[in-house]
Image 1 (cartoon, helix red, strand yellow):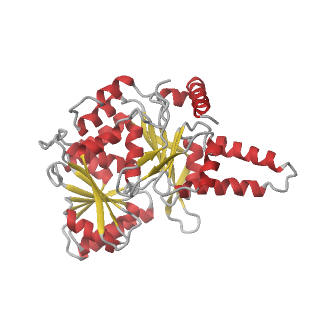
Image 2 (tube, rainbow, N blue to C red; image 1 turned 60 degrees about the vertical axis):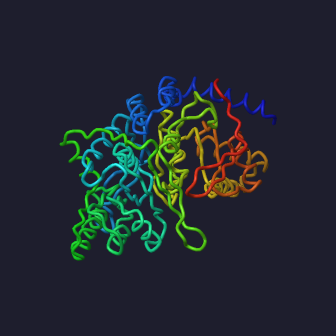
Length: 432
């Protein structure tokens, strides 16, 4: 199919979604905010404030809802995922970030300080990162799947004023600080005091540090925010330096040596701006499922591109992608930005359904078309208007299947883990 025909089909799809999908229509980027964030000389905290205040009443981020219940076998309280997402508005998110920044201002975090964050994309992760933007601090995301021995040199080199860890990574965070550089505070993300295992993990971390005679304070983010709300709001910090370091992403080469990329403020600010080369249209909303690790530049790009356009970023419920199919069906993303192994997971689901229905007597081609439609509409959501495959090469066969599934051109993106993506074959629609 010609490029012109593809563009016409996509334009029709976008118009149809605006007419028939209330969430899609409500997420349209605001031209005035887009222009405001593009003003020359605007600093990163000012861009963030413009976006968060301009889209104040819209849903900004979402996370799977939980129900706390007793496990029938152990009688311990566990968190059970529900088949819906709870969302936080831009105003609520900005208020949470302001409270967290207020609690951490000056002691222990000053402008230019490094803060190491070990964990997975979540509402709490977004809150802490926005707080660091307000404070003028440098975010240093750590790869949650990396052995502690490989993370330790990063902590020693960056000398963070605070270490932030998700509850699932807390034991590794404690090991990091006991065997290397130890700041005075450890902030815990995604902590639910109702859950027995999480409460035990927090108590164990405090006991281990106490036994080692550490003076480190271990504090859930919820407590940090509560303390900040009781204090006079700390102002946003605009550093005197014109283009200070804001993000430091590490990885290691094949020999194990550390390498990474230093992102100055102007590059992090670009994450927030929806360029004219966006994958679909400058007026189309952005609803995303965020499952890329935040230790990868792709994770930052997807999250802040979504927020910068007034969209809604939903976070995958499990970092091992075990909930991916449920998450996708619930979110119904407009933009799909995945690594090849996730496209492979979707293809495997398609093949599984195809073979499970092999004995129903229908013609093979008809059955394949029906299942492709089911996957497109019921699993992926039927409203995708842009698709990107990034990080690693994708096979020609898989690429062709994805394009057939989505009825879209799949944009190729290549780039190192710690670096920004390099886009190829990008053909934006422009304005509708």
